[in-house]
Figure (cartoon, rainbow, N blue to C red):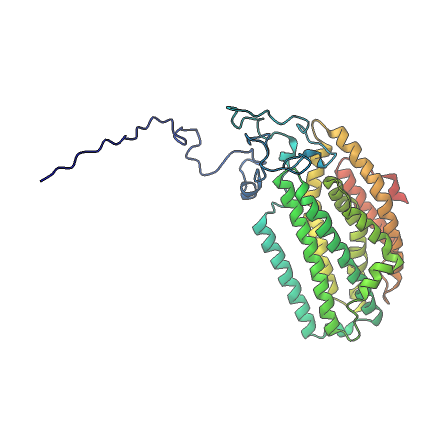
Amino acid sequence: MTTATERSVPKPVFTDAEAGAKEFPDSNARRFNYFTPQKRKQTHYEDVTVEVQPDPRHYLAQGWLYGFSDGKGGYPLDWTVLKAWGSDRPEPERGPGTGGKGYEWPAHGWHEFRDPNEEWELSLYRYNANVVRQLQANVDAAKQAKAFGQWNPNWVRFVQQNVGAWMHVDHGLGLYLFANANRRGPTNMHNTAIAVNSMHLIRAAQDLALYQLTLSEEVEGFDGSAHLETWNSDPAWQGVRETAERLTATDDWAEAIFAANVVFQPLVGELFRSQLVMQVAPRNGDFVTPTVVGAEEFDFAERDLRYTKAIFELLSNDREFAEHNSRTMNTWLADWTGQTIAAARAMQPLWSQPDSKPVRFEDALDRVKSRFAGIVEELSLDVPKELER
């Protein structure tokens, strides 16, 4: 009988030098605390959003993992002329043994922004699904009740031409302004909020497109393609079209968001949606179109404008660059308000097209001007003199 010789194998010796062996005050905590919550307790929104987009000023020891052909890496802060405190700090010098040590969190003021809507992927899917479900139920109920047959003939033409034309605004801003700005924002908190804004507009454009198809089937003589000629050639829409196209060509992501949500939407979007379509549709036998247009109005007034004000309030009161930011945003206001007011005034002929008229155009314009001035004052900016044109 042979006996097995015991093999000489090194045995592990634990010295508490291993990764993960060190005990910290929160080693047994169920929540991470690598960032400072906005409130006393961190929210689920913060858990899934804050610091998802990395920053070499915090802990990327090797710098950015990727870059562009011009040598810029990751998310350059100079993609906007606005600045948050700490923006001018250089990235930490990296080298052997430096580890991930950079600046204390947050490395600059951009990281202080939180979306007051607390939007992230799951909340967006739920919200948009609920909106689409409700709109479809409204349209189906109208079809069953033969409600579209109550429309005045002139209102049929108004909807096919002008309500249809608004989908071009939604599609252009959603796909070419907000989706583009989404990639350029300095933190994941900015980019998530901007991406949600983009999807609101793209969904609204889709809502209007599907609505036009339904009307083509339900309303005799409804021309579902009439909006193309209106958008391309109608003088009342050319100022809106020019402004929308200029917005989509704006390279500075912060200026694009500011011009769209602080200037264009209050002065043109709310003028058309709230002060015209939603006011006059019921008087012309249409109780369905206001629900379609109203869903977009709620998106902007209660959600998109809310996060926009949170972004720019921080910047206009920044502890290091408040003066620079306020001066820059006041310049943007002067530039964009003049063009947007001109575009709004060019829409005046639309007020005379329905059989049953809405409030006077000048009264409607005064209302949106007052709302716009209130937004500007909330941002601690100067109401531009161009508003009186």
